[in-house]
Image 1 (cartoon, rainbow, N blue to C red):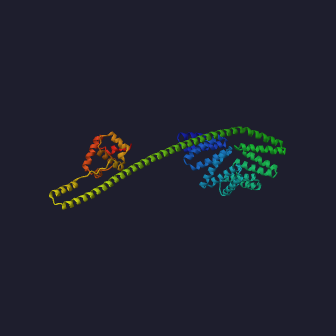
Image 2: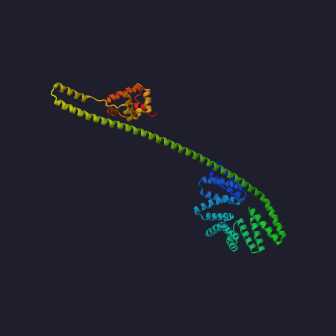
Image 3: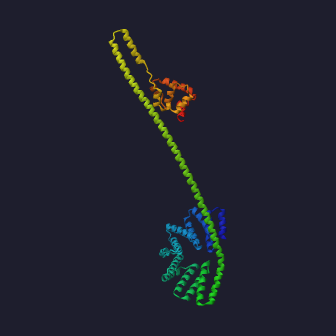
Length: 466
């Protein structure tokens, strides 16, 4: 009642940590009363908060408690899971009391799992450690655990020695009941029936002082069988009556077990749903991640291919420009060489002629040659070879849309489309920069480029991208 009132107060004040502590206390109370379903619910809710708050100590204690609940209710798989968590935490904490408790837990679990060798090894380790600790209750549990393992292994002398060690440490009805039950088993082995019955009565009496109905039922059952064998009918009948009284009380415990099983199934179903939800989210995240990677790869591929095409185009433009300039330079050098040779011959001829009129005519011819600018423009075939865009489909579309372009304007467009400067065009065509600029102005008018910010190269670029 007090725990419930405290829980309400902490919930009203949103004190999550204190609520968890109270729920854990309530879980202990429910377990002592045999109300396993509520013990499980409260302990799991408290553990969730301990985990979120990183409360290592309480998280460790809740693992130990849950292992005990599952073990007592026969769910040994879950019990082993929590016992292992508790043992790992105890080993890290270097707390000898917790570690001995963990060893006892795992020893009992190993034995119930038919791994007697591991159970004995763990029990021996626990007994070796507990000799130096002041916790008598823990020593009693460890020694009783070892005596039970020895009895089940057929080592009765060793079992009796461990019971002697435990006798001075007994503090609770459960441990007294366990102690006298083991004494009873050893007496039976020694064929001392009277002593066995005496020890068994003491065990039953101890268990009857607490909520140990299953142990009590087992004790009465043993008494009935032994007393039947001895012929003590009155004592046997009294024990049988006590057995049935205990069995009737077990009905409510059976209900609690069923409630525990039902509650456990609900908890497991919720955990399974959460796992499926997490897996669904993980699958969705992976799908999104894969999609993002695919899109990124596509974008990178498109970007790389686009840059490669642009680079190839630039390289082609550069090759065309260099070839044009190189061939033009060769042609110029040939022309200059030929002109120098002709002028030299004319000079020799003039020197050999005495007629004044003839000499004047030779001088005029020389001047005409020096002053004449020979048209060095390439033929359309040469342009197509040196400037690929000159004969391309986009270029033909440009000519189709602007049929009034002159031959020189078409060639100027070809040179501008490969990003040649006015000076470079002037060098190739042997026209002045002023003439080139005037030709560009005429082109702008024909193309309808009234906005000064738009260049002819940008206008031609749309044809190159077709």
